[in-house]
Image (cartoon, rainbow, N blue to C red; front, side, top):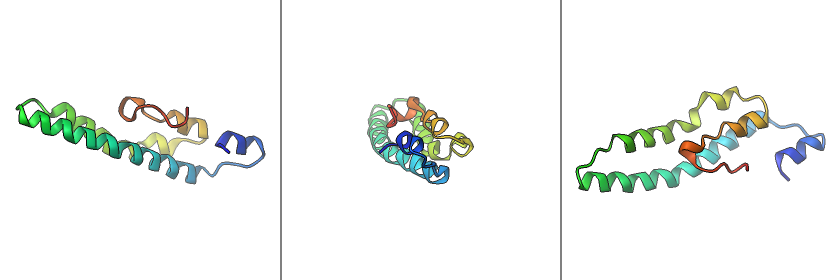
Amino acid sequence: MDLHTLTTMGFGIDMAKAKQIHKNNIRTVRTEKLAELDIEFQRALETSADTSAIVAKKQALRDAPADSTIDAATTDAELKAQWNTDILGNSPYS
């Protein structure tokens, strides 16, 4: 069952737990993305290309679980909307 089904059945959502699950989802996704960026970084170093954009992307991925909008979310919809597709890719909630 998904969160919406549980809510409509009269079960509430434990937002503290939902936030932790959301952060874990971010960590799972970012692991693969960081590995991809590590390869991109190494290739850039080999050709003496600028690495600043890659470094910025990696930092954004590292910072993603600490995004203040996660802690500010009061509903599951707000939490799901927080997924930053620019750095994390497609949302697991759609």
